[in-house]
Image (cartoon, rainbow, N blue to C red; front, side, top):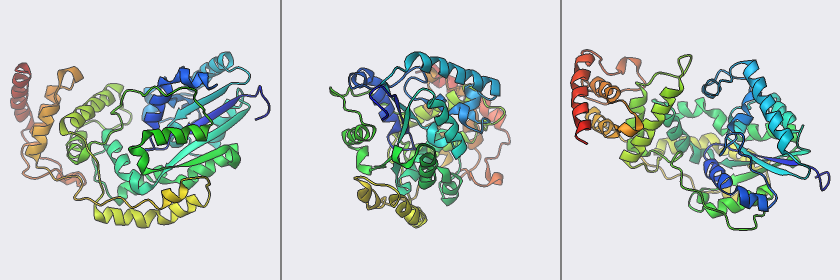
Length: 397
């Protein structure tokens, strides 16, 4: 640091499936603990996480989140940056140490120029900008990222095609180099996300505090558990990706109500199917180990610190199969009936239409064959019948 009155910003780059949501909940529930230790975790941005801090500097503004935040025009983004400027100018004081946490530092700032624009803005208020980033072995990430993709609307199978389409999620060394080129290698702390952190959150918190430089003076207040990133389980995945097929695709017709309803459906599916761990088949496990073996070694050659040998030598994921569990349309329809809940505002008519569309084929839906979608002949008549039964069932609850 330049001196006792210099200002510091530490950016926690929330790569996918590395405990980011848990850490954000912990930080926001412990703002006073952090303050006692000399740190600020701001809540004027997005409260728990700081998603919007990266959005104005992302080159691609034709995304769902930009539309949801009404940030598709240069004027709207300039207004947001002006609001940031107003807040930082008023709140950042000499000697301050701030910590930010955002998934979008990783997923939205995809080039060195975008990273440079974001960091350049922050350097107007902070003398030093440092980075903490966690990396998880891709072999362990894939089932979790797939589950999240299904929650967000995906209906296709988990295969190597999915992995390739989402390659940016696993391009660990590219992300590291991008940030090192902007803030300097000495200012980037790369840490291994170890699978044992999933059952030992205290070890994860201790590792994070050491990486950031936080020394809390009192015990942490444990946040209430959030189920937002919990796995759906194999049955839940099968049910939800069937439903996803009938949701409007994101695009120019994107609306926040659709996303909210899809999220509500996902919560109900998770609650009624019991969730659970999502695994890989033996074929997928073998393919992933072969695909990422070299890149894992290349990453560990560019990082230092404790835990990296353990990260590289963690036992491979235990294969399971088949995944997802094969379910008949009748079983899927029964599960869909179970998710209807008036408090979640999931339309009974909407569910009835899905059930009607599933009613004719004898087998499961072929998500990957456009010609294999359920036969829609007579679905309106079937929907009316199903809707009547659904309403009667709801009145009886």
